[in-house]
Length: 97
Image (tube, rainbow, N blue to C red; front, side, top):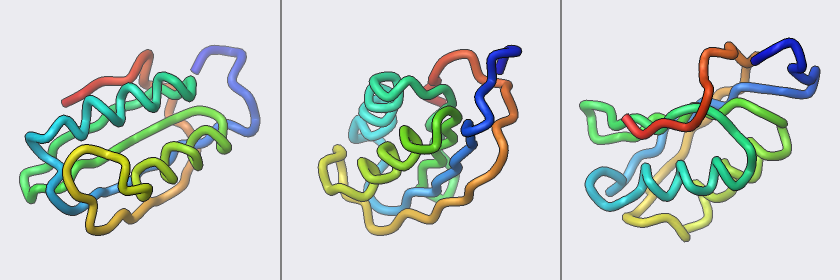
C-alpha cells in the first residue's frame, strides 16, 4: 500500500474448498471485498479450490472470512482454511483470476 498504510492492515489468505468454481463465487467474493474496502484477488486453483487473498483492515478481512463461511455465497463451501500475515502492498483493486 502507499505511504498511508495503517499498522492494523493485514493480509488474509483463504483457501476455499467445495463447489466454488463456475458458480459466481469469485464474483461475489470480489463484490463483498470491495464493499469492505479490501484489495486482493480471488483465484481458481487447478485442484478445484479458490484462493482468496485480501489486504486491508483486520476487521474487514475477518468480515470477509465470515462471509466465506456463512453459507451465503454462490455454490457450496465445504471448508475454509486461512493464514494471516503482513500485507504485501502489491494489489490496487480486487481481481478475479
